[in-house]
Length: 239
Image 1 (tube, rainbow, N blue to C red):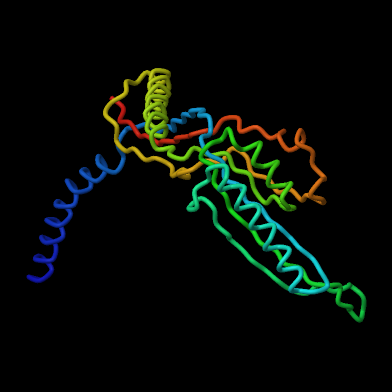
Image 2 (tube, rainbow, N blue to C red; image 1 turned 180 degrees about the horizontal axis):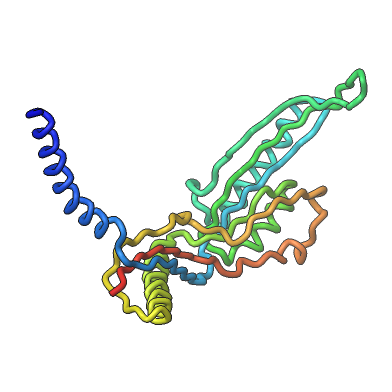
């Protein structure tokens, strides 16, 4: 009997302690707030171009195919250097060599294929058209990518970020006013991750012949503008 009374007293005291804790959790976990997304974009002219170029050579003799490929690669690099492209902006990214066979039941050797891929970064966009035409003339027969970029988008991204925050506040103000509320202090702010470098254009082209594209056709791709984007999510308390 004595033990039952003690247990009852402890239960009452414990339940009394839970009441203020529950009230505090209720006020902390469920604040009156509004959450919005703000987006801003800035259009910037590209200041560099990344080219991914390929040269494929075929011959019944592997040595001949390799030699032909090497000579065309040397001409490509010489042309790039002559245009002022620094060595650090020219990189051979892939080299493959292998036999090619017919698709018959009993395959026959057609010959050998040697392929090299070269990545070139042009820091002077004005040289793009002339260089691209020159690359095709010296033997480039595969274009895997043409990317117009902003080399350092961070200085533009900061401006876009501030505009995105302003857009989020304006949106939250209008929504709160429609509900007969006023906006309080910000509760939480997050930014969605964006790539450090934003490409405007990328492509994949197969050039059937070194002379299959005229100078006018080779200059039909324009850099346009690069979009620097910022997206933020903001939660505001309501008053």
